[in-house]
Image 1 (cartoon, rainbow, N blue to C red):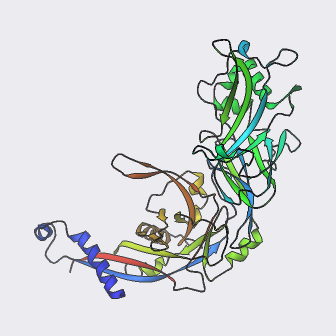
Image 2: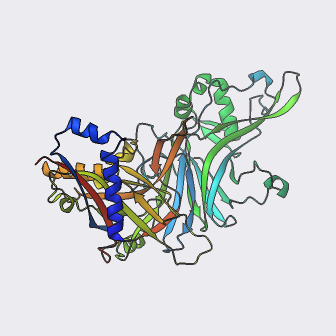
Image 3: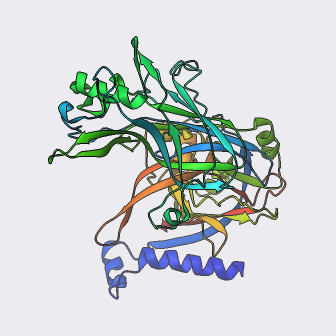
Length: 479
């Protein structure tokens, strides 16, 4: 089988390189001397791998994660909290002040109520698990030109005053206070509602609720509501949602909303109930932070019978590419293809809530783990590659990483003797793509996968020959 496979692979490469149409022989003889001959050959090498524990994960996300769960495969406890700013739509307006009917005893504009609503795109675990969170109003905004990693704590950084304005909330992801008919509609989404109707004091002024503060700021300082930047830096720096209790669920928040309600007159001078809202969107900053059991992660990394991919902020697989062996005796050859297939090991642990399998995996040089994401880079398929999990083969295939092999070889020849010069890391990622009219799909954004995923891969130091890389070389013989 191996000989047959290598023969077919060599035949394919040779065909691609030297066969274009039925005039190939004539074309070749007209361009090169008849003594030139193309030599194509292949070889297979063992690849070693191990699990590593990253210090943190770099990058901001458009999904917020909130909750605490226990990994059913390993017993590792993962806790997630997140921060969201709020986007101001272009041309944002409230009704003219004289149309507002909600007033206090002194005739000043007030909101009837105010709330945060965290709309879930999905969740992991038990939707009826009793959880707790505390929503803190940020004292200062996080800035867009900075990078915040998965270990970032805005309280420790002084961006949140723990004794400042906050609201506690006990919740279940499935809100059973919503009636069954509402929950049955196709547009219904699970959400966490946090009431902000208690008094709020700012600059010596006490408002009966947070919505009244928003409305007064609008009428007193309309310039604060001309852009998201002005709104964030002068009115609402953002909210930090910290997990404070419970275990059993992780909510994936795709749309945080800040909503306030009031009465006003419409154009017909009828009094109506109205509302206004601001949303956490990709135009503004959202960050998630995670706390893991580091001791347990280190125990998993020490398991040499396999390697792991685990998110969020969990475990990566490091692969050492045998570049010197690949290039030995082939210094004058061209490495045309280098094919590496990494099989996945099926989980044998029975569980009610299995973790998802990472669907997209990025391969990059180990020394680029943080800079790649901090600089918002995309895969170039030269020194960075994407592989998509195949259910058919239960593996991740990197079909041609010859660019990586050649780049590492040149770097080593030019004096790179660092300990990781020939090492790459496999990192689960989330992709955003666009499809053109001719059905060409392009990656437009890439970020660390912050969802709960896990898998074991074939490899580890106990299995040094488990992974193979197949390399195809070519060269022209001129003698």
